[in-house]
Amino acid sequence: MIMLKQGGATLSILTGVSREKSALQVRRLLAICKRGACKEWLNRRHKSETSNNNSTLTLENTFKCYDLETGPPMDVELSREDALSMYTKMVEVRRLEIIAAEFYKQKKIRGFCHLYNGQEAVAVGMTSVMRKMDSVITAYRCHAWTYLMGVSMYAQLAELLGVRTGCSRGKGGSMHMYGDNYYGGNGIVGAQVPLGAGIALAHRYKDDDGVCIICYGDGAANQGQIFEAFNMAKLWCLPCIFVCENNEYGMGTETSRASANTDFYMRGQYIPGLWVDGNQVLAVRSATQFAIDFVQSNGPIVLEMFTYRYMGHSMSDPGTSYRTRDEVQNVRETRDPITNFRNQVVRLCLACEEELKQIDDTVKKQMGLDVKKALQDREVDEHELTADVYAKNVEPRIRGVSGYNLQHYQVAEVCLGKPKPTPAKEIKDVPVGDAALLAAQAGKMKKDGKKTDKAADDDKTKPPTKEGEKEKSQANAKVPPAEGVTKTAGTTAPPATTAPLAAPPGKTPAAPPGKAPGAPAGKAPASKAGKAVPQSPAKPPAATPAKTPARAPGKATAAPAPSAKPKAAPQTKNPPATSPSAPPKTVPPGSGGAPKSPPPKNKTQK
Image 1 (spheres, rainbow, N blue to C red):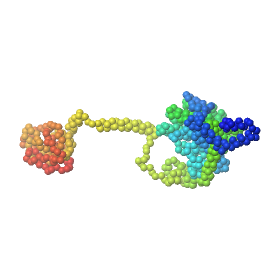
Image 2 (cartoon, rainbow, N blue to C red):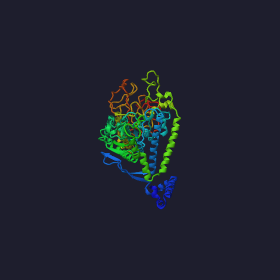
Image 3 (cartoon, rainbow, N blue to C red):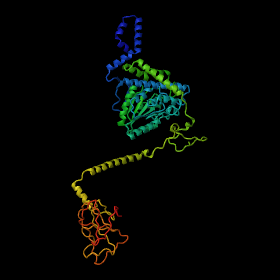
Image 4 (tube, one colour):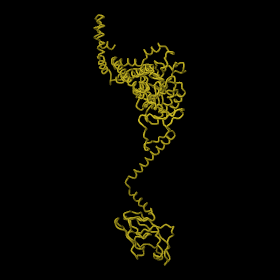
């Protein structure tokens, strides 16, 4: 139709010629398109008829809302880059599942194997708008999610084949593959849902603005643990998106025979829900973006992705005993996600058929190389079969195994050697539960305390006022010096008023009546050991010496008891000012004071 519209002149020529010549000209026109002329024209038309290199498409009959004021936008924009990226990913996922089915039939893949054929739009559409901090956990139909969450196609093929280069060292198989922010497939029906609620709780604790996408099937929708997870997620307002991938059959049972209520997006009851056409990748992308924005401020939401699987429940299920082949074929022709998106891309003039066909061939070729490489690899060694039995090994021997002496290994130890112990300074004590709440309160109090200390430091850095200096000098005048400690030259000692020292018996002259003993005015008092007390370089304020009771004439002062503490020497009323470098003055002999003492040493007397 596009070629006819572009070739209007050609159509006029075709109407005036014979049928044979018309057929010849049509074949020539198709050949020109295959050589790339169609691609160039589509690009020119796209750039001229759209703004910002984006095309707009209106979605119809793709959403149903439950307990939501507004739903996702019906008009979506699609750029050429996004269109080719999503188309390529869906083709890669489809090709991966085709190869897995072939290898399973050849018995190169063992164990369980659940394929994703027909549901590619769900995983591709959701991951196209996920952010780096968002996480995913899903059930055992996980091949597409594993690849789209960052595990390479080769690592996944190697894991399916059970070789050592697989993403789980070849020991996880189809249902147990993991990656960054991807918590893998889970083999227990519905068990991943409460785990996903815990992952959402971790996002809330870390405050990283991330959300958790929790996928489960319609067959697991009746599990009690899912409703328990609903309740906790709503109570705690967790940022999680519950996604029910309704492929219309729970194992071999149709949904209407197993569920009394098949509107799975309403199952949350007190949680808002949204029904999405899961075979339209643009509808899935729009709904996912809406859900991510919604849960960050409103708590959880339930999405029902209405889709279809072409294969059986697993490779052991032919998928034809509970449905007809005509039903499967009808869905392939009318609702296939890849075919529908391919038609939309061509209709929006974002790419032509030849370009999309080239993408198909490139994917097929690259996947063939990955398969060839994985088939040449080998399994893990025998001693690694018992590795990773314990997450944290507390004893070398594996318990509970009779008849064998199995030693525990970790994959990191097998591949890279034993890890070095973590330095104590790098170990972080992360509180959990009630301890986390107490730690948060302590951190808040500590933060408030830092603010108070900072305010006090700011007060200290302010220049002192005159009133402040006056108050400080008065406070210093009231502080007595330490007992028994002399002041060295060059230091300022606070003034104090203390009683005079008691002189040894027989050496101190008797004090006249009515006069207290002590050094005369202007002389430095002596210490107990006979050393003079050095004077302070600064002039202290005047202080009144303490009064002592008068002694009887002719009587010497009694020596103090051995257990009594010596008292400090009195401070003179007007002590002379001395420079810091001047030596301390001593009391001359015969002046009525203490005997002459040797020059003071540069040590503090104890």
